[in-house]
Length: 449
Image 1 (cartoon, helix red, strand yellow):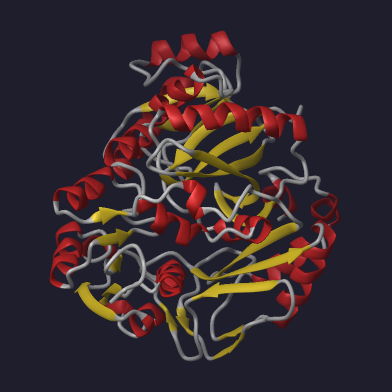
Image 2 (image 1 turned 90 degrees about the vertical axis):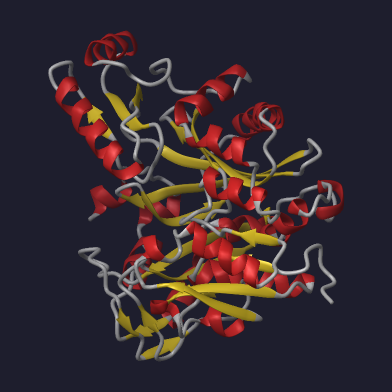
């Protein structure tokens, strides 16, 4: 008999996040069910879950994104909750609703909240209403090129067009003049429609060299909200993060406190529950502007765990079971030290081309202040069908310099043979004077490479 808040949990994901959820469930005494595609038959989540069910072929649309197959697996295995991890169905309001109708607890926000936060201009309006700073932009979705030009001239060029229903850089275009706008708007709408099944696009002021700052939130189902500090995510390529750290080396304490107070009220007002992340851009003056809410656990959650001592995945499960934050958290949130996470991806560190294949040699680093979250193992295969994440390497120190020194040591001891990885790139970043000094923005990799 399980001692945890649920009888059994199915993990609707794969790779390192599936293994991470299994670990949290083991800590809570909850049996787990892994679902897997044929490509992941020999994966570690399949090995270490209490039960494993194949849900389809390698293609994610016929396995990890196949809602009927996942719900069937949940019903066959008699689970009472599903953890979606990140990516795949984690922010799919329809999936959350199907879980609800099926009598299975979705470990995440309510379907209507996921839907509201997934439409970016609605999220902007909600945040603006509660005093959270947002970038000047269009009042909702653009209806025509004329409206776009009128809005852009009011707030001043450059502006950026963004897909309302998605992220990751798709449906996004920077516009420098009125002449460019109609053509780029059409491109953004076409790309957004293809990527997210919605051609809705909105417009906002473009910050040329921003920093990317996000705040981790935890909220229970009783109206209590906690903000667990921020993460700096500015080291990225084509809007994909490569490295994250907490706290940000650039955020002023007074800006942090002001945004947290406004954010707490906004999150409470929208009825948000479970874990989530609120993302901001920081301009050259150090001011923050809201961009979007990610209604799920993030890849980079371990850096927040390191500086707070709070297990975010266990917290997700306990909140979903109806527990109050006052019982879930060990006491008042306290921040200690500094943490950095490097995403070790299966890709060429110079060209960023994917590098799937068999791992012929592997040494994972250890020692004080080092954590490795990975689904990789000797002779294991990194398949070509999914994202290229091999491992997350997290270094913790009493301050930022100690965290950097420990990360350097860990990268030197991290060996992955048989495939290319981003380890050499991260070694270079750790030794780059501007990074060490904390002087960087989201264009850092583009300028540097």
